[in-house]
Length: 107
Image (cartoon, rainbow, N blue to C red; front, side, top):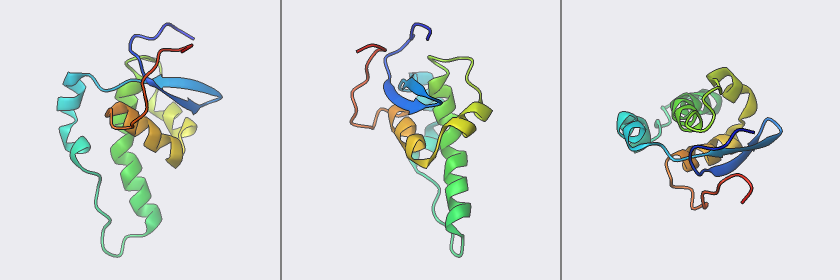
Protein backbone atom coordinates (compact mmCIF):
# COMPACT_ATOMS: atom_id res chain seq x y z
CA UNK A 1 0.00 0.00 0.00
CA UNK A 2 1.36 3.45 -0.90
CA UNK A 3 2.27 6.06 1.70
CA UNK A 4 -0.79 8.12 2.61
CA UNK A 5 -0.81 11.80 1.82
CA UNK A 6 -3.45 12.60 4.49
CA UNK A 7 -4.60 10.94 7.72
CA UNK A 8 -7.94 9.25 7.32
CA UNK A 9 -10.56 7.04 8.87
CA UNK A 10 -10.10 3.35 8.01
CA UNK A 11 -12.98 1.93 5.99
CA UNK A 12 -12.75 -1.76 5.13
CA UNK A 13 -13.55 -2.53 1.50
CA UNK A 14 -12.13 -4.65 -1.27
CA UNK A 15 -10.38 -6.87 1.28
CA UNK A 16 -8.41 -4.13 3.04
CA UNK A 17 -8.63 -0.89 4.95
CA UNK A 18 -8.65 2.29 2.91
CA UNK A 19 -7.95 5.48 4.85
CA UNK A 20 -10.57 8.03 3.85
CA UNK A 21 -9.40 11.57 4.61
CA UNK A 22 -11.52 14.64 5.10
CA UNK A 23 -12.21 16.77 2.08
CA UNK A 24 -9.78 19.57 1.40
CA UNK A 25 -11.12 23.07 1.97
CA UNK A 26 -11.48 23.49 -1.80
CA UNK A 27 -13.35 20.20 -2.15
CA UNK A 28 -15.59 21.11 0.78
CA UNK A 29 -16.51 24.43 -0.81
CA UNK A 30 -16.98 22.98 -4.27
CA UNK A 31 -19.34 20.32 -2.89
CA UNK A 32 -21.24 22.54 -0.49
CA UNK A 33 -24.64 21.69 -1.96
CA UNK A 34 -24.13 17.93 -1.56
CA UNK A 35 -22.82 18.40 1.97
CA UNK A 36 -25.69 20.59 3.18
CA UNK A 37 -28.34 17.92 3.04
CA UNK A 38 -29.18 14.54 1.63
CA UNK A 39 -31.98 14.25 -0.92
CA UNK A 40 -35.43 14.14 0.60
CA UNK A 41 -37.58 11.06 0.21
CA UNK A 42 -40.08 11.82 -2.53
CA UNK A 43 -43.76 11.16 -1.99
CA UNK A 44 -44.59 7.77 -3.45
CA UNK A 45 -40.92 7.05 -4.13
CA UNK A 46 -39.85 3.48 -3.42
CA UNK A 47 -37.18 2.82 -0.82
CA UNK A 48 -34.91 1.39 -3.52
CA UNK A 49 -35.28 4.45 -5.75
CA UNK A 50 -34.59 6.72 -2.79
CA UNK A 51 -31.52 4.68 -1.75
CA UNK A 52 -30.10 4.93 -5.28
CA UNK A 53 -30.60 8.72 -5.28
CA UNK A 54 -28.81 9.00 -1.93
CA UNK A 55 -25.97 6.83 -3.22
CA UNK A 56 -25.71 9.02 -6.31
CA UNK A 57 -25.42 12.10 -4.09
CA UNK A 58 -22.81 10.61 -1.72
CA UNK A 59 -20.58 8.66 -4.07
CA UNK A 60 -18.93 11.58 -5.91
CA UNK A 61 -17.97 13.23 -2.61
CA UNK A 62 -16.58 10.00 -1.18
CA UNK A 63 -14.64 9.43 -4.40
CA UNK A 64 -12.88 12.80 -4.35
CA UNK A 65 -12.01 12.37 -0.68
CA UNK A 66 -10.60 8.89 -1.31
CA UNK A 67 -8.63 10.10 -4.29
CA UNK A 68 -6.64 12.38 -2.01
CA UNK A 69 -4.89 9.23 -0.77
CA UNK A 70 -5.66 6.84 -3.63
CA UNK A 71 -5.69 8.79 -6.91
CA UNK A 72 -6.05 5.60 -8.92
CA UNK A 73 -9.41 4.62 -7.38
CA UNK A 74 -12.30 4.97 -9.82
CA UNK A 75 -16.02 5.49 -9.42
CA UNK A 76 -16.65 2.01 -10.84
CA UNK A 77 -14.35 0.47 -8.24
CA UNK A 78 -16.18 2.23 -5.43
CA UNK A 79 -19.49 1.00 -6.81
CA UNK A 80 -18.14 -2.54 -6.50
CA UNK A 81 -16.39 -2.10 -3.13
CA UNK A 82 -18.94 -0.12 -1.13
CA UNK A 83 -22.22 -1.21 0.34
CA UNK A 84 -24.73 1.03 2.11
CA UNK A 85 -23.03 0.51 5.48
CA UNK A 86 -19.49 1.33 4.33
CA UNK A 87 -20.74 4.16 2.12
CA UNK A 88 -22.11 5.93 5.20
CA UNK A 89 -18.82 5.47 7.08
CA UNK A 90 -16.82 6.78 4.14
CA UNK A 91 -19.23 9.72 3.76
CA UNK A 92 -18.86 10.69 7.41
CA UNK A 93 -15.09 10.41 7.19
CA UNK A 94 -15.03 12.63 4.09
CA UNK A 95 -16.96 15.35 5.83
CA UNK A 96 -15.18 14.95 9.19
CA UNK A 97 -18.44 14.27 10.97
CA UNK A 98 -17.89 10.65 11.88
CA UNK A 99 -16.78 10.96 15.47
CA UNK A 100 -14.05 8.50 14.47
CA UNK A 101 -10.46 9.51 14.92
CA UNK A 102 -8.41 9.82 11.73
CA UNK A 103 -5.26 7.73 11.76
CA UNK A 104 -2.34 7.02 9.51
CA UNK A 105 -1.86 3.51 8.19
CA UNK A 106 -0.30 1.29 10.85
CA UNK A 107 -1.59 3.30 13.82
